[in-house]
Image 1 (cartoon, rainbow, N blue to C red):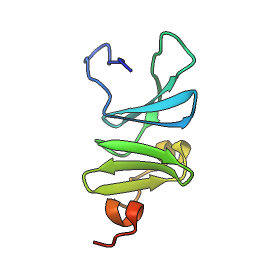
Image 2: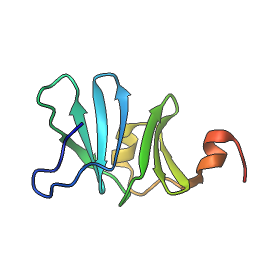
Image 3: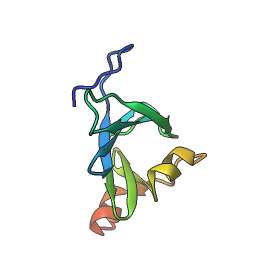
Image 4: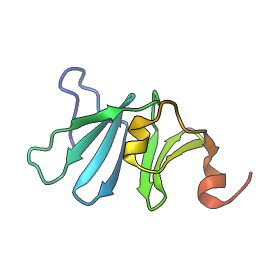
Length: 102
């Protein structure tokens, strides 16, 4: 998307979307919303999250999934993610996504 922090120059770590016109970008422990209908696109702080780092993120019918290494954290919605007082319990990626207990 070509969006960098104007102060630090840091790029976003992960992206996910819950709507065709809206995407969320993660940078450190902040979650920023980008309206894809706007031009130029500029991120707006949606809130902070209880994770210091996110490797990847995904939204689907089950909610928001944040990935860090071989673990995944699940939240029912973006609102739950930003309002949560602590990270959701880490779960094994292969067990959650592929049903493989190993």
